[in-house]
Image (cartoon, rainbow, N blue to C red):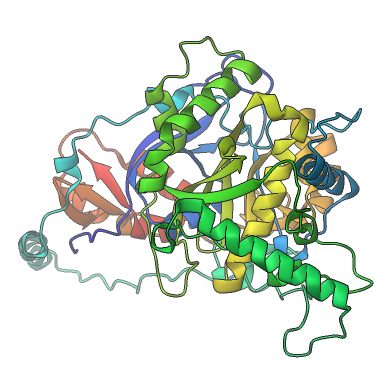
Length: 528
């Protein structure tokens, strides 16, 4: 037993909730999920949780009960390093360029995205407010190492006394280690193995700087102009260089090779004419803990969200309140981390703000994690619906993931939330290829092309075709689950001896089976 350090995740498990309204099929009580309140969470723990089908809304972390919920929600991830925009994606990018250059806001028939936002997973978020924890912060602060060691010594002494009374000595086996699945069925991968999941070979992307090809003078002039434009954009974000919120700008990857299809960078970072009608800037600001830039733009961002909710989701003028906006889209349990090997902006929760001519027109809420950019939500000014900002922001986030990958090589996936095949208007996420769906039983990734035929026949499916395959990350030793009880960190086996009242073993067993052995031994499960 040991005291928790500041980087420990602390969660309060609520179990399987009674059904609540589904934001997709509108079933009043059909949406079923398990949930827990995350008082704090490391980015690695959250990465491992979303690789087991969990997802956050504010500080509430939930996992759909896949074989019971009305609209099964499968975790979907895109592979940005291999991504090529489709015709419809290019159309959206070209439309934005035309608008920026000439101010053309004409709408083309059939040009709109299938939904107002590409991230509607959190539309039914009443459970966020309903399940907010009322535990005081003092109860969540673990005691010092000396205190926990004292309690551990007392417990060890009790154990020795018990052993003396028992004549038969029990030989305990060494704790099992989590197995790495080397032979997953088909092309599926282990989701809880960073090495296996995240060693996708880099695609040929952009020019090889060590062997520059012959280039036309026109291309060199365009590159110089682009470089100057990006420099000006960087300095215009937050004033002086020391105040600039960390933002990675692609310049090298905007160069395309001859005879290769255009990448999204070729559209996003194209040089605009000097007399362009509009200027678009994208700023990445840390939302939790809130940076000074986030605080300075909070009110403007909230007003955009309010207009969005009123126009798109028909909210009354008195909703959403600032408090609801904060809890839903600003609060996050993720701890900010800035390791030397990570991206310049660090890991954690951010708002990606889209500024058009000096005002916010859209905000993408994202989490930057060790192996991915995880999309949380998007809201935008309804006056700019004609720009298909849901699709445009998704493409920008894919490009952003590729930028981050340049510094943090393991960060190479873009998680788009949930894919819901039983809801036709939510199938568009499958258009970002290549992409994979998470098997809800074995937690391996399977290419979406292999999943779609089975989803046509049944809304709930096990994607792993190897019928012998099991969840390799499942709980093997319940006693090793870490617990925070009366500010003392201890294994569940010790807590169980101390607990008074009815047994909570069934609840702890359910929690551990859902988060997996690895997370259950790292995170602290709060017990009153």
